[in-house]
Structure formats: C-alpha cells, structure tokens
Length: 152
Length: 411
Ligand code: FES
Ligand SMILES: [Fe+2]
Image (cartoon, rainbow over all chains, first blue to last red):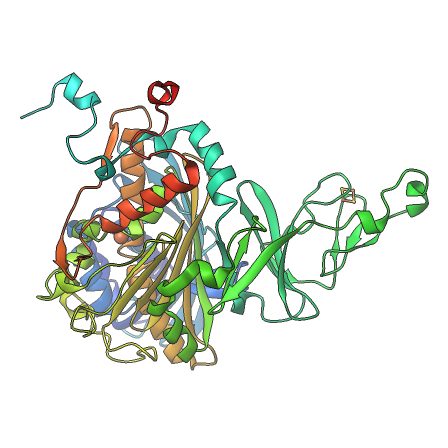
C-alpha cells in the first residue's frame, strides 16, 4: 500500500501533539527502531552548524524516562506545525520539511514564543504506516532562557 | 522551629565568613562598584584561539557595558579594542564573528587598521583646522593575552600578567591543553535573571550536585565521590578539583544514567576514562574537562540582575566527523540549552534571585565545612565559595557579609 502525503502529515502533527502532551512512549512509537534525533542550529559566533541534542532510540528513551526525576522548567509547550514540502525518495522513504513554532506557557498562564525552527524529517514509507526515520530540528532560535530537558 | 521576624532579619548564627548579604546579588550601587573595582581589574575570558585562527578573524563581545572587538592582527598577535568609533562613538564592528581586512565605521566611514590605527577620515580636510588628526583618533586598545589557547583581556594596565594571575591553578588544565590541539565546536548564550556571581558560584558549588539527576546518578553513586579535595589558590582566588588525595583520577559512572554509556572512548590526552576535572578562575571563568570534551563557561553581567552566560565546547582539531559527532553528543548530554544540567543550573540561579531580589532572603549561607585531611576540604565544602568572597572583599574594600554597613563605617 502506498503511503499518502496526508498520512505523512498526520504523522508529523501527531509527533507534535504527543510531545506537547508528554506522552513519551507513544511519541517514541512514531519513530523507526534505529532513528536519529537531533536539535541543531547555525551559530554565527563560531561560524558553523552545531548540535544541541543528538540521540538514538536508547538515548532518547533513557532521557525521557528520566524527565520526571529532573528539576525542570515548569509550564507547558505547544507546537504549531505546518508541513511545507514532502519529497519522495523512491518507494521507501520521503523527506518532509515542516515549519514549527513552539509556544511556552508558564504555570501562571503567560504565553510566549519559545523557539522557531524547521523539522527536516526522513520518513520511512515502506510499511503499512509511516514512521520517522530521522528528525533534525533546525532551530532559528538560539536563546531559550533556562532551556529544557525535552526534545523539540 | 520557624524563625521569628527578628531572627529572619538577623545575620545567621555562623562565623562571619560563612554567610554573605544577599545585597551582593541585587544592589545596583554595589554592582556599579564591582564594575569599577573588580570586573575592570581582573582578567576576563574572551574566546578560544580557534575562534580567531587567521589574520583578520574577529569576535565581538562586551564587558562592563563596553563593546569590544578582539581580532588577530597581521603580526598574528590577538588584540582587543574598544569597539566604539573615535568620531561619534558608533559601534564599529557589528557581527559576532567574521574576518576583516580593516574596520570601517558604517556611520561616516572612518577606517581603522587591525592594529587600531585610524587610517581614513572621510573628507579629512574638514579636520585640518581643529583636528583630530588620524594619529589622534586611533581606537582604545585593551590589554589582551593568551594562556593555553584561552584569550583573556584586562582593562587594568597595572594588573599582574595573565600567567601570574592564573598561578598554580594552571596545574589542573595546562598539561591537558598542551597535549590536545583543541578547537571550538559548541557555543550557546543564555540571558538569565540573576547575578553573575551566583552563576559562577553554582559552577563552584559541588553541594548542588544533589540537585542534578545526572550527578545524583553518575557521581554520587561512586564510593570515592567525596574524596577529591579542593585545591585553593588563596593569592588569586581560584580553585580546582582534579585527582583524589591518592592521586587516582575521579571517575564518573556515566552508565548509571539510563541510556548512557561510560566514557571509555575518545578520551582526551592527559585524562583517564571517565575522569572529571574542574577549574574555577576568579572572578567568573570555569574550565571543565569531562573525559571527552572541554567546557569553558563564563558570563557577561549587564547589571546586578541580568547576566548572559556563555558556554563553549572544545573538541580535537582535525578529528573525523564521527568522532566530532560523538564528542558533541557527550558534551550536550550534560551542557547546553537542551541538556540535562544546563537547564537546571540556570533555574537554580533564577529561583534564588527571585527570593533575594525583594529581600525575601537576606543572607546566603556558605558555612559547609568538610575536611578531608592535610588541611584540605572536600568538594561539597563551601571552602571555595568562602575564598571567592574573601577575594571579592579585597577588591571591593567591603566585607561580603555586610557590604553596606554605614553604621560601622561612621565610627
Ligand atoms: S561615528 Fe564612526 S565615522 Fe562617524
Ligand atoms: Fe550544575
């Protein structure tokens, strides 16, 4: 069965919703077994790209399991995403480009923009349902105040 | 038993060097005095040499409100100038980093060479009558020196040379920096609502490791965790912790954090697998070595309650892409805005500041005493924090526990 563009979009939007809700197990189920997850950006200070998070399944799983044990930023995130482009790479994979705005809401209810960036996803479309094979969240925003333990 | 109002407002019943007044974190007058008496008289970390490897490479930065540009001049020496045009004061270099042949002010197009000489004044015949001549219009050069690839600057022409200033504290990192050819791969900056000293002292306060899930699981589980002494440099106010008393390395058990492995590969020359070494240089530069990567941390204060923390990661120059990626991965597991510890440290500072700001916490208690033998103290002692405030008092001419005691001063 061919995976449609709508299925790919739904997968990406679901990844945003599950992360917003901190449903980490379901979130990880959206990825292939050997996925690579990165948060990157370009630093004009050092004139190069840099990685701010780089994790495979075991590492991301460990990290998300540890989240409740960490001293964390209080409040919540809301990801607003728009898939701009889907490109097929033969029958098995597709590349998707998604623009993402992440809003942060304090426990008192004040909302601000936390970060903007783009998901560069490689989607595995070889099975019955699409899965994220690689995600690179390329951030435009490099100043994020106290920071967070969560993937973006 | 809860404290009464009077008890709450009184200094804690500990020796005088074991607490500081919270006003050192919040008072605008004390901050202005710090700029003058301390921050402009000590060596300030600027960047790593790999940020300015070639002639014309520059970095812009600020210190005590003064915009600065640090550049590698044609004679290969790294120099720093006040980044303000001699004409009408505009900032001359505006980007954070780059390469330039000369500096051109965008306002009226005066030009400066990479030694800070003014080389061009637009329609210079207009200055014939009253000046200034080009010779009179050079940029202000600020003392700049390099040690172990770390570039520092100092506004004070009379301060001791950088090498002398760092003193024996170099023991902890000089050989490691000598054996490895480092290059920068990570930089992040974070604005925080808090004081620059509070940020620096978080780096020097090992007691706060209990606040980090990473440290709770990877450090505190180690039986010899408490056996590393602070090595204090009383003359300059620096400190470091490295080897244990028996000269064995202190090894972090990274595998105890779910999903992580021990750091056995890509070990920096001069370190053992898993080894952790930390150096804190007065007043606000920290050099951390976590087996595979180096973190250099300092901050730029813009007021008593506004600090920009800056964090750099160093790896090995010319290493393979795969090695660099692994090193960067291990760096950002612990440090950076999306790391385990980075997000926590900033919150520690901001949460304390929030209580100090309006007087809800009058005193900061720094009384921990953890002797380890030979007159040395364990990392969880406040020995370094006390040394820091002792030095602070020397520069400021005021005790940190009672910095604005007008009553006593009048007698
Ligand atoms: S202010 Fe720089 S040229 Fe006028
Ligand atoms: Fe910390």
